[in-house]
Image (cartoon, rainbow, N blue to C red; front, side, top):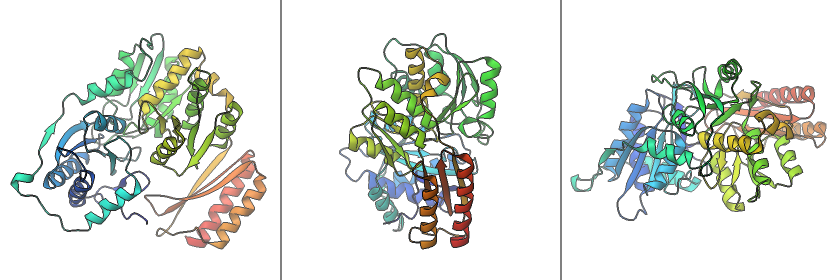
Length: 447
């Protein structure tokens, strides 16, 4: 059964347009409070954190009111990275955690993500339960059964220690020069302290949020400033986080971008050579074929899931693996985090750098990325293309031309009326030709 409001990663959209409005957030807080604490033993308690968008104040208050009306106590964390809220939900033994963020999106957008008591994203059936209750009248509890709210003052410090503890005891980053871009987002406070307390010589960027500059010409969606800074500072590497801190991309010593697939490969390669080993990696439909082939060469099993880090988590649990993620920079390091954590993932890559004595460029050299091109075909409304005979035949024809050394993927957006058309293969000219042809056919059929 399809969800009405929830997309690939929570609920997201433009501020002021349904459902990203104050009245909807009030109702959402009430519905989520009832569903997520239904089986809570003892006190019903939910954490709320947010990124640095100006609209976060409004939605924080609306969600707080809805939760309290449902009889749920609320712990307000303020600006905190998404993975910090996942961790603190577990550490505080809370019933659930809520993140107010639109991640890498521009400031005009906002959204809501939920974590269950175990720090993992909600399964589909729980999202459907929340949606069903949203459509019911809001009923406010009487005075004796209302929740209470409080501010948590030491949340950032707790998360900083959690991140540092993801490295082996005694290991430090002395002698390493790092340029760190926090995208004027939720990591602006915690991330610099993590790297500096671990001993790295740290040059910071994107650490002056004003409510409006999150992700603006900075962070993992705009890498050019970081690339230039790494070269100008003669740094060992650069780290680019997104607005809510669940994604990371890096820049090597030559100023070249290192994407999520390459980061996953470097961590897997390092773990494979260690005594504990790497028993498998979970990627998504968008993971580069080069990652799959490089892992196969190392003898590391690889599986693909639907796009979204919660599906990667499900695959890791099912296979009892500990590493997975997406090219976009969601990297899940099992044993440390239950969701994508940009700071922790960056530290795991840096661990591989330190222990191997190699540079980032040297570590990633064992993986050759296949050319991959994507075109977003915007539609007038959301359309199911799965049973379109013309489109399906075009996919078959394109894959024949790739001759087993490439892929075609058509993926509807979870939040917008568009189809993402992706083609991947060894020959970049053929890839561009096929993706343009596929995009044209999709537009003709359903645009």
